[in-house]
Structure formats: C-alpha cells, structure tokens
Image (cartoon, rainbow, N blue to C red; front, side):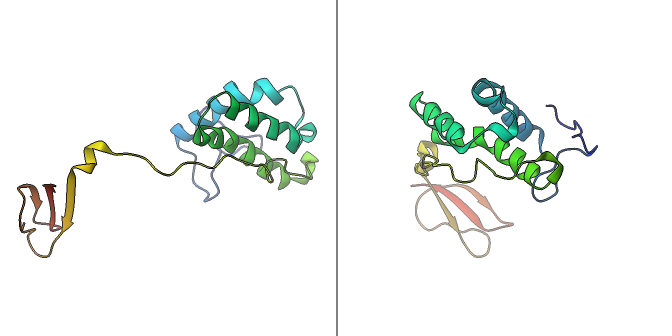
Length: 148
C-alpha cells in the first residue's frame, strides 16, 4: 500500500472525515499490517477471521512486550478494512470481528522533563512578568515563558 494508491473503486483511500489519509498514517498502517497482522491472519479470507483470532493476536502482541498504543495502531487498519467491507454488501462480510476486542488500556501518563522546569503564564497586554526571570515574552499574544 502506498500513499495515493487507488482502491478497487478507483478512488484514493480516505479517512472517516473524507480527507485523504496522510502519508505517515498509511506507512503506520502498512507496517502494522505487514509486520504483525499478516503473519498471523494473512492467509485467511476476511470472512474467515473471527474475533477469537484477533483477540489471540492482541494477547500475543501484549505478551511479546509491544506497547498498548502500538497494539491499538496495529489494529486500526483492520478496523478500517472491516468497516469498509461491511458497508459493501458484495463483500459478503456480515460481522466485524474487530468490534468487541478487549484492548489493553493505553497509559495516558507521560513525563516531559524539559517542560517540567518551564512555567507558561498567559498575561494581559504585552506579557509582563512578576517574579522569576523572563526568557521570552511575545507581545503579540501576551505569553510569558519563565523558569520555575
């Protein structure tokens, strides 16, 4: 799959908002499919893949140490494929095996060490500073960035 490649209907691939997929999105989908999905279920027809097959894939990826976020990105192209197949009766797909998967929770806590020492203060006017040393003041938007 490459950016701009047309699908069988003759149109470039588009996301749910109707916009063309960005090249980075297509690359991520392609990598996830090629490296993780196709080795497990690539020999099966779409109509043969079950939610159990995909749950086993998710569980195996988690057990192999793949991050929760990477597992989610790996499954996204399958979700797109099945959503599209369900919308087209000629595919014969009646069930989306990706819909009821138990996905690992993605951790939302992260650390930004470089940002931890910065304090951003939005001020009125020209971005005056009260206390601390001001490293940058933007008079256009009134944002003062100072070391904490």
